[in-house]
Length: 247
Length: 247
Image (cartoon, rainbow over all chains, first blue to last red; front, side, top):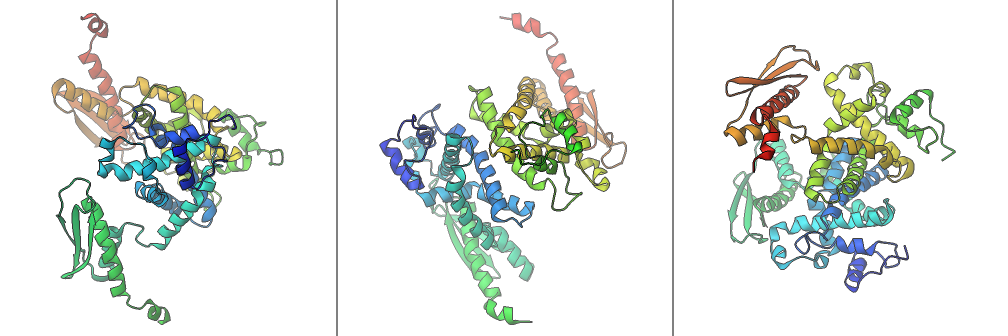
């Protein structure tokens, strides 16, 4: 691998951010291509890498989950994997790593805030493809990805709502009161892509249990549902310690 | 790999059917597990291999398609891949290879003919996982799989209906007459899983253009649509040679 060109100055900062080292045998040219949005070049961009990286991620996640949870059923592994490979999880990972400043993107495309989450998820998949292609196997991917998958999978397993608070809240209110919560959503700032464009409230039994904001109705309602879910769990189970003592 | 146990007598016939040789360094125990349906053992079966093999297949197909069609867009590759990894394609591959007699399955489960296609598709995915796990990369998968992908991808590219004749027929009638065909479907033999259970006819402009049969309404209609599609193409373009000469 010594005949590969060294990383550029710009790429070095990204490499450090990813937690990789410059002495690792990585095809730096491919890694650099993983950071190029299609608005910069119609040919030399990360589209194919994202396409390939999607399956690299699914394969690595399948291997990881089997090793990490050897007693789980395939159904459980499959449910966990579908969360781990979702755009939502990948965008959160890109934000966790602070990848956004390293994406080469045309200003016009960067202004499309509604597409931000999806293009950051694509960058993570493209980086995984670059790591895979550097070796032709998962020997670079797994050591880099596993700690992130471990953290994310544990969050999912400890979170009964599995990041879908609207569904979880619905289950909760139906189980306790056989009724559904009511969402009241308004557009407060009609700017496409604005993170505070929509505001949602969750009402149940004549009380507002949570409020949320988001660039879409769905995001605002999910945020409101998360607040309401936690508030309602506390209301239904005020002291779980006492429950444990009940015979 | 010489410390791995040799293949059993039963597995040898399957190996020959797959076009592999006994001198290839394959983990035969894992390949044998790929042929065990969950009805035979709740633990030692092919469920996890199928789960892993799904992503092995997607990865191998992405690599193959990029090499085979270097000028295609990622959108085109993505559309081709979604057909190649579909249950329909995998079942056809399992039938092409004659894998069904090698599946170890409980008689009660084997009687569920409606699930036949899906479990044969699962076997192909599980075999791909076994080949992948034997080496930890695609070096056994690609040489075995590529000729099949090549044949299947070429079939898809030469087939304008891309195996979905209902959609293709709808496009054809709308383009020529701005109207939709009518499907008349009846259950002729109410036996679950019977290949002639449903009969479908495609009617358009007071004429029946095609008939089909199948174990589901969908399959019967697809078969009828395929017949109708070919008949209608001939009717709309009776002699393509003449069209070519038109300036």
